[in-house]
Image 1 (spheres, rainbow, N blue to C red):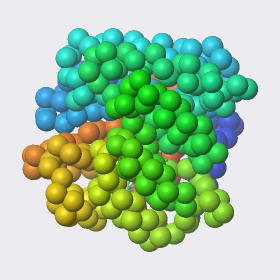
Image 2: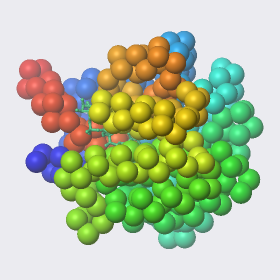
Image 3: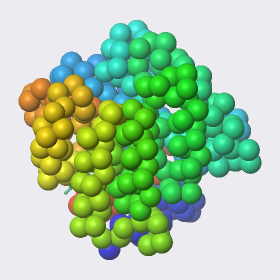
Image 4: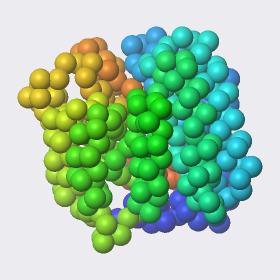
Length: 307
Ligand code: FAD
């Protein structure tokens, strides 16, 4: 019940100011966002990869309102990729981007986002790694998929995310599976209306399995973005049935959530990638993590009260 309220708050500027300024928030935020700068995050990348995990890095931020912010976001990613080059991890450290951070919602935003993201995709390819386009709310997806198609002309390994809760996703999965894309499948983290998305957890979970089956049987590279133990064991079964080898799909989870499961899957020989966000504009990302699990909110509120 609380999830939709928190997701509504995640889009409120008043709540953003209030929560961002709360003195203990930073401590709680660190569980999900282990750094503010590229200097903070490089040791985290080293630590995770030393433990047999892979990473995808996200510079937090979204809903850019000025073109210069979009340019700054591009530069932040270029700086990150430059630093990753020194680590020589190749695909073991890739990046994830939100096109709204690259200006997608501004006038002429589709072109602006494409112009800003292209150099990031090219820089990543030059160091032997990849970029995945995150999925945001449903109104942004036609533009995201068009940008994905455009980028893949020159850099075919560019990936994208699809969300099981949307009715459109089965059709998107069929198209992407047929054209050999890298696709991360997630349940979906935004507040979406009943006209476009399943609302009940059981319906979303069933849709996830249907879409995963399409991806596993297709020509692309499925990336299973979920912490759900049931989904993980179904994914293993579907991969087995589709005769996929261990390096022909991967699991992905968020930093700070089910860390022991990350290590267990890696120890079983799976590719296990940890989505690791960093930066100062953490509000939207953090609020979506609170909305996903009421216990996170309880932890957050308790830490404010016991201060
Ligand atoms: P759930 O059924 O929500 O959770 C299963 C179990 O996982 C829970 O019982 C709990 O034990 C644990 N868990 C889940 N979430 C949390 C949490 N926040 N804190 C603590 N425990 C938790 N969504 C998008 O809309 N667009 C994206 O681009 C996107 N990228 C993602 C990338 C990755 C790698 C991952 C893992 C998720 C991403 N998401 C994205 C978020 C996703 O849509 C879900 O909101 C989120 O993963 C929770 O769903 P779940 O599959 O883990 O299952």
